[in-house]
Image (cartoon, rainbow, N blue to C red):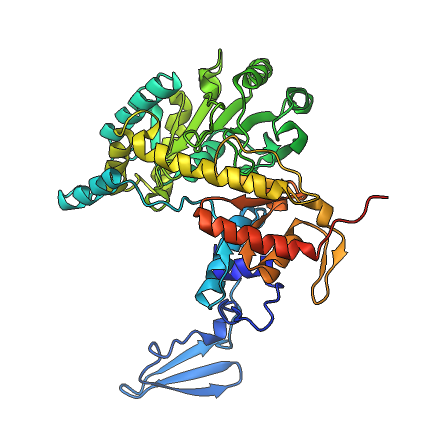
Length: 480
């Protein structure tokens, strides 16, 4: 995501007398600005009609060049690229970062990135990998050491049995997911996605020439998929169901009983596969518990389980995720990866082995982070619960609060556009309170906004105070 693409999302936000980021976004490249002077060095130019003669001062020879008027470069892009939308979460994060760099004291609560440092044992393993010369290519699917450690983790923590040849380690769980979608979907296939959804799921389906089929959920039902709705949407074109638990953006956790109901429906459709995105598995708040979809009766053969190290282990910059599943599908993912990126970083893989060696569910370091996340969640739930017109589904996992602020829509603010949807509300809050949040329409629910509480408690306290003050101007309309 470039700064140029992010400017289109919040570019209309007015910052008043505060510093702005105008000028940070580059204009499109102008072909006329490209210089080829070095190619023509030592040549003089004479023009005659449509022919131009280049005389070499060194040899006296003449080169005739036809039609040397500037030719416009074909700037068209592939239909596949034009069919997808850029990530709004990345766009807003980039915009907020640019504002901070321009001197605007923006509180950034848009990115899904833990604010903790990578646990020391994991970091030291990466440093030692460099010192010990583990800096070369690894096997495309990942080192045997790491894939074996992942198999052990999945067996001990998730009740799933895999062999190393049923694992592919990638440059982040995002790569694992998109490779899986590309591997199993064909033109005309349908990918079923419960909403609110992670922003990239529908675009990944489109990249594979498949059609995303959105299954709406309700805040009153904790944003959990209704099995009856799923069954009503299944057709002969249905190829893939994507589940994310704990969920980004809602923090919802699917209870085992509900997953069993979904599994019974899936089992009746031979073409239907499931991607189970479990990247937030260890960020879960008791009494909620995590269930891997592949562990349910009859689901191992048709489930692709995705996980990684970015969220629970605070290793976002290390870029490491993995996918596990039946060898037939995993081999296809491995083939795609061999053409896209080859193997993941050798250094990151050594750090991941150390992470998996820290104990059940990540050990003490992850438990410490989880305790902080829970404290922050409780603070936000209590704080926003005290504001009139706000609807909340208490998160059971992850580090996001997805709150319904639609009662504040429909208000025209002096000096600002009418706040009539989640995007205009987020622009208003960025302008008025200098807090960067993500509009719910990016996740398929325009009534809500997403707040990431992967920030210190003091930062969240300051953000809440700013938001409360900004919402005073947007008092909910009085019910008739």
